[in-house]
Image 1 (cartoon, rainbow, N blue to C red):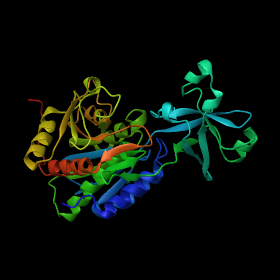
Image 2 (cartoon, rainbow, N blue to C red; image 1 turned 135 degrees about the vertical axis):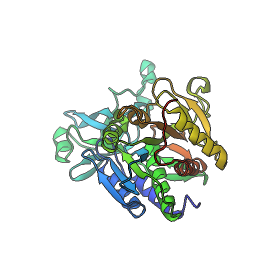
Image 3 (cartoon, rainbow, N blue to C red; image 1 turned 90 degrees about the vertical axis):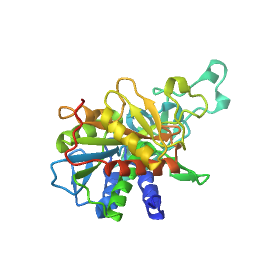
Image 4 (cartoon, rainbow, N blue to C red; image 1 turned 180 degrees about the horizontal axis):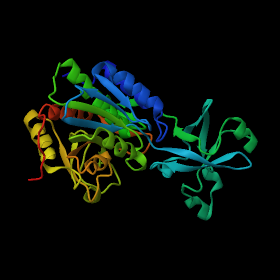
Length: 359
């Protein structure tokens, strides 16, 4: 299977470079939909922006493969009289990385450019030298003289803010950029759809390829769409932490490394029998994989699917990622390929009507 083709990587670059903050995912969803249209039989859009394509529709047995489309961001929260903007989080944005970052403020008339300012090192003395970024002291400068000028730019409380950053490839090995969490998941399931079409696979069930919204603020898109589709099983993909970079404890976080393959999670929400099918598939097909455990919840859309509709057997396949929730998230190409392979090959093992009763 040729997976990371030039065309696929061109789509990935366009998809990642486009901003799709939580609650404002429409532009990214349009791009994703246009890409998968040739590989699906029909598509649907719900009221909050989750899109799902369907392969082989109309079957009683429904299988979901899912990623989430939204990225972390900020909201304009307050505009001072002298024209500086205070922010609040939209999702799990990291205030520590904000100073000196360039941003796009989304307005009805398009982007307004700005920067997260920060006092120069020369101006910080004594206790001030220990000054650290906090959610209540970071601010955005749009070059305005006062509040009236900011408002005249079309900026108001509630405007969403994203970092200005583009994807790159590092050492011909890593995809690098913002929002790999988790538009890389949307990319992976789109490639699964492409491979099924190119290889003329006829599935014995209906396959729902789901790109959910609002994961970053509580799995809300998956919660909604799970109740719409009412699947029999769900295969969810998200990202997980590479713990082999400095300042991370493998004892506390787990032992996961970029380049060693996708991670398969053990957690109460992850169905034991479905997970074993994934593991057996990986071993049979020679796909490298890693294992991790999650206490209580996985913190991913797996939980939303698993605990919907009286219980939907669900499994989580994760892409190892460095520097999550920064503008330089890193994923190794080989891991991306193996996530796609593992989902694809697992789908070929699923039988229509297959029971996942606990015992």
